[in-house]
Length: 447
Image 1 (cartoon, rainbow, N blue to C red):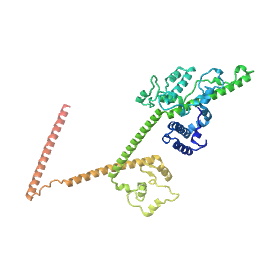
Image 2: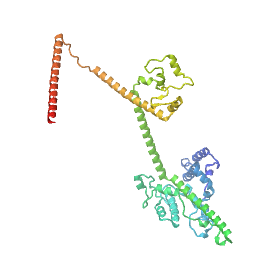
Image 3: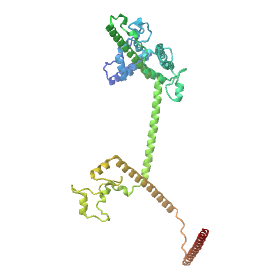
Image 4: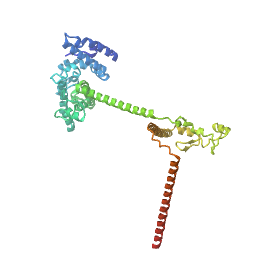
């Protein structure tokens, strides 16, 4: 069956831009959409699927480049295969391997009918194709490990899962195999063939007249083999990627992952919003202190006008310190870093130190510590204010005013109690002191 060029389906030139492709696709979709063709639904459905496939292929830069490079081979399709089933230039080699030209006819939605397990459906057509490719590779001798990998590959059916979770992995494994659908596509998108493609040799080495001609024949044959091998491997890899992109199981897996990513992003944003709300709430309770209004960056300059005894330095001396002469050295007090506890020999050294990451980090640490202490102080003040308000709201009962005689009596009782306490203390002290002297004498006699 002859195929129509994708550019002709969309009605654009081969140099059309993405915007032109999109515009042409929308125009053709309005014409051939099944809902717009009630009298010819079957044909409209088929043409609309081809138009959609053409736009999906040409809108993808990688697939468009592949299509442009193999356009003639893809358009030949079934007609070319009927003339030569395997596209071999020399069938005398007695080989039955699938050719690159045969693979080209599977790069189209016309190769199957519907995404189901029917004989002509998507899953049956490409399951048979990849099974054939696998069996051809097994015909060529290889290592047992590679044979095991090939035998475990299976395209699966319409209900085979793609995901790679622990539970999904067990269900995603094809019956009787140990590989998932993800493993299947990973293998074929990085496929490398065992075939030697010796049937592409143009010359028989036995016909060479001499050694020089033989070497030239070998070089030409090797070149043809490598070219055919490279084209075949690229065709298989691109076909696997093309099939995976249109596989409903892969699309479902991608949608599921996108939903999970969206939920994780929403959860992350919610946590960030809660953290910011908590910070704002703490900031609203924070009471700004007076020391925060002071510019501590110039704290050393504020003390330059004071002497060691604390007396004010005359204005002339202060001006001399603020504007030192060019040849006079800087004072030691100007060149100290109070935060890092360091002294410097020149103002340039101090300036470089203040720009360093270590100094700036120390400054930030000090500021954070001071802010933390101030927050704690603000909370304590708030608690004290709350306590005072509670006491004001619930005052304690005030004792009644005592008369003069009652006051004198109460004072005498307090003095008597105090005298008794002193007497007890003196007697206890004497008894303790006497017991200590007695114990000391006993120790001396023992010695």
